[in-house]
Picture 1 (cartoon, helix red, strand yellow):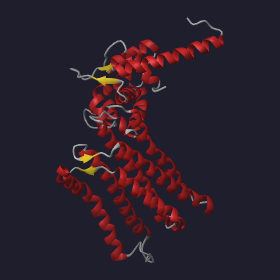
Picture 2 (tube, chains in turn cyan, orange; picture 1 turned 45 degrees about the vertical axis):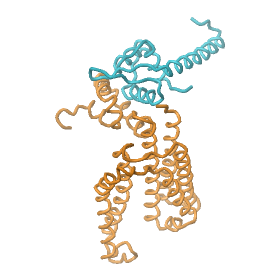
Picture 3 (cartoon, rainbow over the protein chains, first blue to last red; picture 1 turned 90 degrees about the horizontal axis):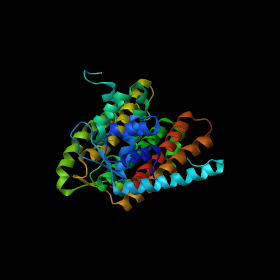
Picture 4 (cartoon, helix red, strand yellow; picture 1 turned 135 degrees about the vertical axis):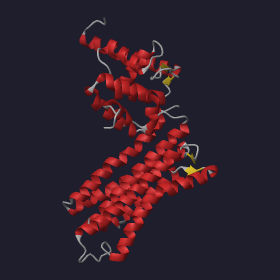
Length: 99
Length: 263
């Protein structure tokens, strides 16, 4: 895995299109039921930007929107496929059919 | 707290300047919206980001390498400082301070620093000299004061009879503060001037230099801890050895961050 949980969540919600930080966290809350801490959110954005997986766009308000790069899309797909394989294997071992 | 300085703004201000410039307003809004329960997370991540300067928003890979080298210089300076304080204050360890192992590690540190230290660009030499003079003046004055006091009254030069303990402590504190401040100002000089004024080390050279520094600081920690193991209970040496053992691995973080960073 190249990225951690917070980074995967951020990439996931950015797959829908560019968002600013607050909107990223709101989308994560809708997806998982809880928001990331502010430090975790912006720490993840900082690291993802350094890896070239997201890029900050010029914003007209207080916050800068962020979008997924092509490299970010590729890494996200790879991570999600790996997670899907792990989930499928785990469910099989438990004897539970994937929903 | 000054007027207008809310807890959210204060916490956001603890983040490294390039992170604040990129995400500051959003970070502040998020801390304000999440309230008190978000403060530990905000504090912890601020500390974490200070330990990873190579991932801060940068204009170029050279800027990331410059920050990585500044971090390596800072950690090395801290290790040297801890060893220096330990050998100066602990008579038993002072003997070890003259040992071959500590001498070799000091030489290793010097070699590693020579490999990674960013060099001033010829066009920026004047600015570099100006900043170095301004920033270096306070620690140089403090060190000169300590040396002058030692030479006029001799409280630390072996003539301690009749010299109050507090006077000896004050001179030593003055000397260590000067050394710590000098090391800190050297690192700040590089980061303040930035990639326009200094040349960042090339990736291979930086990697080699950091590995040499890692070996030297690990040898330093090993020599102090070996003394602790061999000489029996020595709390100050044990503290210094533990500090060195914690600091040395920090040298690896910029290398790891640079390997992952692609922009």
